[in-house]
Length: 188
Image 1 (cartoon, helix red, strand yellow):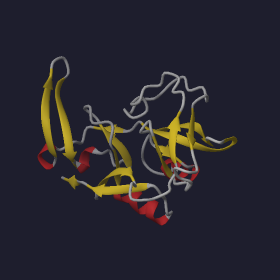
Image 2 (cartoon, helix red, strand yellow; image 1 turned 60 degrees about the vertical axis):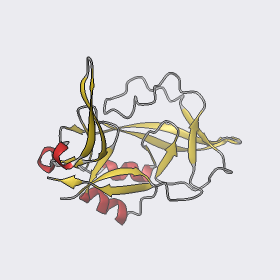
Image 3 (tube, helix red, strand yellow; image 1 turned 30 degrees about the vertical axis):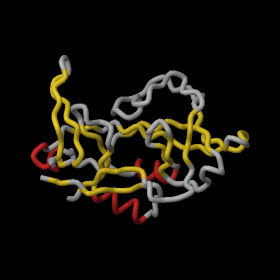
Image 4 (cartoon, one colour; image 1 turned 180 degrees about the horizontal axis):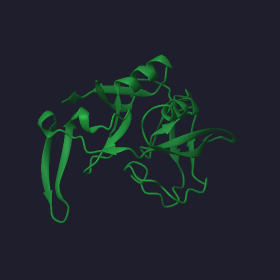
């Protein structure tokens, strides 16, 4: 099976880009590192302006770097083999705050120890107290260590990128999911 690194599709134009005004103390990577988030109280909101972009995509760009998904993409993610915490958030147009859409932060919890350094391009840095940190520019993974997951993150301090299976890629193409770009990675 093939696997892909998932990113935001940055080739598109006029897509909505969401910005936060108050983060209520929620750190940038809190919802990127593969751990459940407790204590969400629905106060957090994202804002956009029509002048910056007005096209709704299934994966919305945002200045927190969170995996911000439409209900359509949420339903698709719920149908595949993975573990995800969905956190509801409102998206409002900055000049018309009464008009909003609900999206979800898809906090990918599924994490696997599948990084294959032999098939990756990286450099290693030794950090006292942490050990070896790998900065990876091109990923390779062991397919037999993915637990057959369709959407996952890598463990060992590689939790930021999201990876998906060929099955998931086929589903997003079939359902015409927007805002996602995929780059095939090496698989052993």
